[in-house]
Length: 143
Image (tube, rainbow, N blue to C red):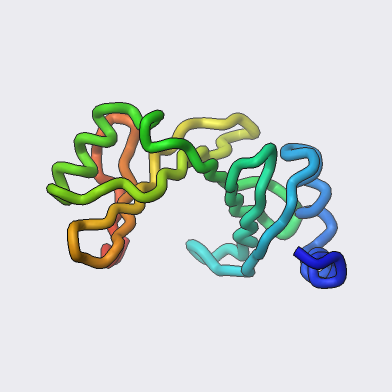
């Protein structure tokens, strides 16, 4: 990313978010972000790279990390999770996997996995699966 574009991008983010990202993920390179409202609260969805990995974090304006996601290899997906996703979409291939981490009382807790699937000749879809294989959410769900 060009230095000027990066500087403008970072200036628009609240300083507590920048400080918290640097503390938790030193050297993180922010790619893009958006300000959203989830469950009545304002959150900043920040997409960045760290140590060569693609990550995302939902953060409060004061810099608290609500949850974060890290890209992992499909081969690192637990079998029960992979099997549940592919059972829901037989014949699809796994395109991308993000490991979801919730931050509860300052501690990281595995929340599940977001999996992008591509059926043969079909449109990509995203599915969220709990560590035990339970389907949490799918593109088009109202939850």
